[in-house]
Image 1 (tube, rainbow, N blue to C red):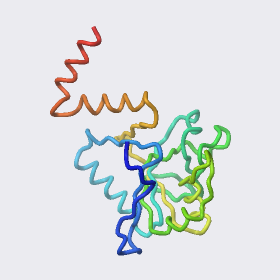
Image 2 (cartoon, rainbow, N blue to C red):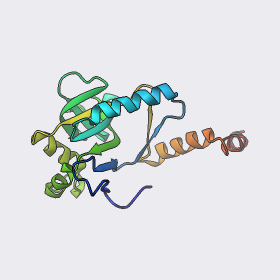
Image 3 (spheres, one colour):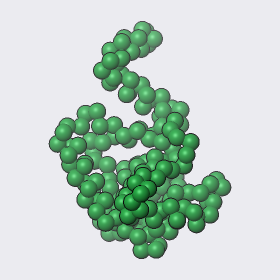
Length: 192
């Protein structure tokens, strides 16, 4: 599921442009199958607004408080509207320690600053270099780090475990214009 490289550089010839787009360590899919052109345009507008002058933009979604232990959680600076400033991101906090219920939704846009910070980041939880730790360092050094909420019409599929991967696969496969109808009929025969 995805590349074996931890990150890829984009626009390497122009170090002042946005340079890094990362999937989360637990890759995810964001569905916009039912999104109208108007909603897609609104999302693109939020993204442009958020990226202007930011060192990082991170997508977030609300999760039940009991689930914060599974995600990086936002600590907004003030009100957490559709686009908001971050004062911290906490990796897999306890339910009591979680500063919000806004979980990283597995999509990031970074300026080139993140590369130097990743190189300085010591291994964290699980003995791995945690992207969250580099983001925290970026915030501590005064970087402009913004969060962007997924809209109510955008759905994220967590595919970091088999159960949720299977659900995501089935839902996407059933909506596939070429194979969905045939697959739906096949699944019906299995359920009788």
